[in-house]
Length: 264
Image (cartoon, rainbow, N blue to C red):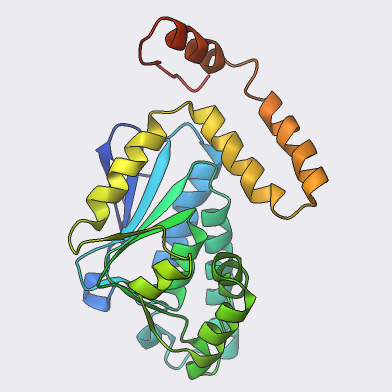
C-alpha cells in the first residue's frame, strides 16, 4: 500500500481505522486530475488488500469544505478529449470507492457540492456537520452528475426528491439531508470527525470478515428480488462459518469476555 500522496493525507485515528483526508484546502478540496488518480489508486489498493484496515473514513481538510467537486480552474479551456479523459479517471475512482470491501464513512465537515457530494454518496453512510451544505450543481454548468450521482442519490432519498435536487441544482442543508435519509447523523460543528471515528471503532471491533460479507450482502442484494437476495445472503453467510473468528466469537460469548478477532 502506498502511504503518501500529494492531494490526500492518510492517518490512523484508531486501531484498524484508516482516515483519508481530501487535502487541497486552498481549492476547497476540489478534485483535480491528480486527486482523482490518487483516490482511484488508494481505493483500488484497498479492494486488493481488504485486510489493510477494517473501516475507512473520508473527510476534507479544514472546516469550510468537504469537497467542492471538480476543479473548474483546471477544467477551464479543456478540449472535449481532455475533459473526457479526465472524467474517465473520476468514473473509475467512484467505482473503486463503492467497491471498497470494508465499510466507509463520509465525515462531511463542510460544503459537499457536485463531485464532492458524489464521493460522499459513494461511501456506505454519511455523518455531517449541522452547518454542512450539499448540492449537485452540474446542470447549472451545462453537464450532469457523472460520478454516480444520478444512481446513488435516488437510492438514498428516492426518485422524486433526487429529480428535484439534480434538475434544479439548488443547494440543500444538512437538516434537509438528514430528514430525507441521505445523512445518517447530524453532528455539532467540529465534532463530525470524532463521531465518525467512534462509529468506525465500533465497526472495527467486530469480526472483519463478517462485516465485509454483511456489507456485500446488503449492497448486492438490493439489486435482486427478495427471493434471490435471500439466496445470495445464504451464500455470503456461508463464508463466515469456517472462519477462526466465528469460533472465537462463540468461545468469547460463553467465556464472558471480549472476542479477539483476527480476520481469519
